[in-house]
Amino acid sequence: MKALLRPAEVIVSTSIFTAFCALGLCIATERLFTSQSLPLFSNLHLAIFGATLTVYNLPRLLPRPYGQKRLTQPLRPLYFVLFFVGLALLLPAATNLNTNVMFTGTALAAFALAYYLPSLPLPQKKRLRDFGLVKIFVLTSVWTIATAVLPMLYLNEPIAHYPFEVLLRFVFVFALCILFDIRDIETDSTRNIRTLPLRIGVQNAYRLVYYSVLAFAILSTLQYFRVHDSGRLLAAFTTSAATLVVTDYTRRHPGHRAFVAMTDGMMLLYALLVVLQ
Image (cartoon, rainbow, N blue to C red; front, side, top):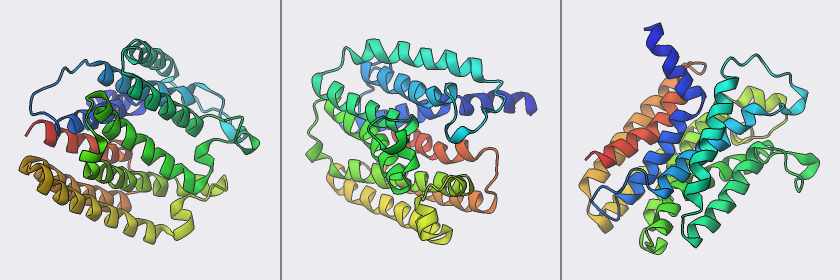
């Protein structure tokens, strides 16, 4: 079991798993427009996968903020490798994207980097994630645009024709981001980062997770009446139920080592259920 657990931990810790979650949600959005399988190695797919590896591994290679000492990181060499692998995938693919995707993607990259890295225009060169309420809305918006809006722009599909896809993606990711903020509440409190759970309380934060999951199910139902895809609706309901189970489990076991895999895994679960229907 330990022999299997170690590779799994490496995949999660280096954000390879997160990159597959982003890619899966992107493909799930594309399935709205066509039932045919699109090329797996499209320029958009490579760009999203590469960008996720780049953005998530870069902060692990830089000095920590708040004067913290960097802990021993046996995976540090792998962070370097995957950071450059991400760039190698991202840069060639990005140059072959259409203008709308490139412009939007560049804006997303700027916000993503400002989220993780100190930025000169911000007060005291802080990161966006150091601003409590800004943190969750920036992260949720970046994920929503990257996995729901960019596929529409890439395939020249009018965004106005698929409003529920954007909205349901936002509330779904928002629910998962709240869980991460709850997990980090002690660390954020010591750094005086007033995140959503710190402002409204942990109990209310969990209620907001439940309301967001409910909104995800309702919006998915409304989307069904537009696209008449029963498989997609079933995927949404199944994912909603699984997210509630994960929320309850992580609430009772907040320090579980598989927290990231279980929480981010809800995105991959939804994507797989949509794509494999």
